[in-house]
Length: 238
Image 1 (cartoon, rainbow, N blue to C red):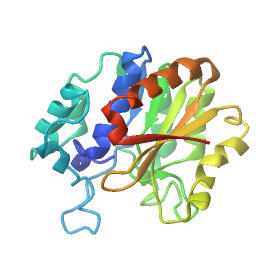
Image 2: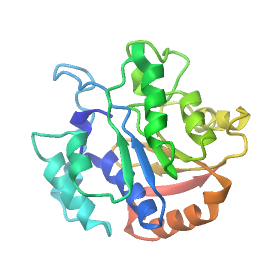
Image 3: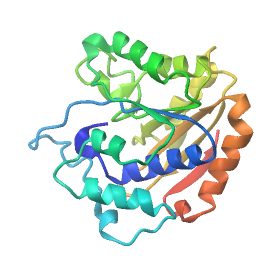
Image 4: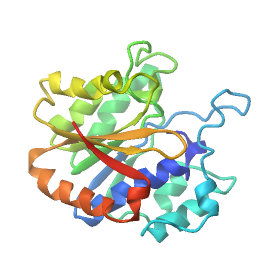
């Protein structure tokens, strides 16, 4: 996540899901995986520009979220701090310390300590799950969450949701990134599914669900998708 992305369509779906889960009784921990903004001349500067939906009428039940994102996403002051202060949550903790490769291990342990007691942890890296081509401690490694970092939250007892940007590989190859959690000792028993958001660019929200959470969480997600949110998100089983 970058401050310059605040208020875009990714925040609409992500925060919509989390607000739905909080309303269902789950406590939330949100790790922004915050990284420095890109300069205007960067090739990726267009990321976070998907705010056209904020210029139309609200088309989901969450008018409060929509109005809050309008104020932030259409402004010249887009920051995660403003999202945190927007009074969108009542029982949510945030981890907004900037992630830098050289201090990654310390950063992760501090985040675990702060967020670890929450029911549901959302991990929000720029790109998603780690890839072989990028070392987590390298310059661009902060754009990814590692499998171990996600598993650490799960081992502490949290249900984990991970943002992952859809790449250009065939679907069966792409989904192998998700199935890798089944091969890990720490997460082999997790119940897994993902929500796909397809507007503008395709992004997935992978759920690693604790057994004790599954029934209530599945009901909450199914009720959420039974509303106009189905225009933005679709559920897939793994």
